[in-house]
Length: 278
Image (cartoon, rainbow, N blue to C red; front, top):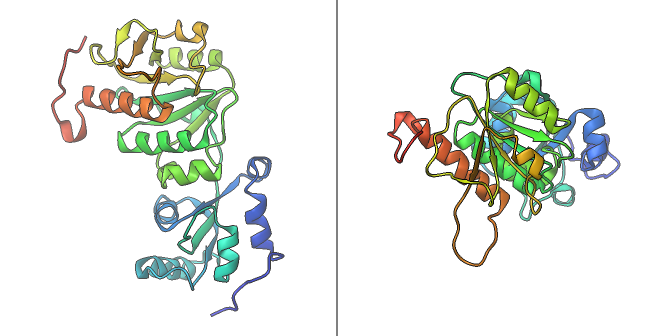
């Protein structure tokens, strides 16, 4: 086995540190993935892996070790580092000893395939990377076709977003529209029904139909959707609440709506939908 890297001056180590900054991720079209499950999903999804980074003293899970060996035999570069160095590089408490540098970029809207039964979630100027990663994970769980970001949004390749997505980032396309106008024009051209969301919207999300193709559009944490964007929705809906809180967390709201839209489409394996459908 090659000697373990322990120096912070190693080029791979320096690159991992650089990629913690958005400007470097955007410029180089690459980001860091950490953890056994996310890295494994990147491998299985055929993501463009530049290098696998392994701390042999930390990585004790034999199936993961076997996967690393198999990838190395197929020509994927593997770099082995000391446990102390990997821990300093890690974004996690109790790191597993496995990371990867992966090539990736935001998609253009025109790269998103819209089918008659497609459901998408759209986020207007979402700011919290943890929320974004959680929504990507929920989108994957609910057979949602894509996540679309509008405007000044957080980076889906931010370490917090990648961690929260738990590898779902490799299964769900994430695209970006510079403006709401660009998104609504794209949706209209493809016959996509847009459901906008607000606590002040007139329709209860339980009582409406969810025609497809469908895009569920949510606003940023705190301010929500601007009034002019909310009004452009073909459907305008709210999630009813009791108690003292004025709103739900963005990722929770997205999860509630994505599951209801999935249920309206028949749910997993054609499970029957309940409730009225318009």
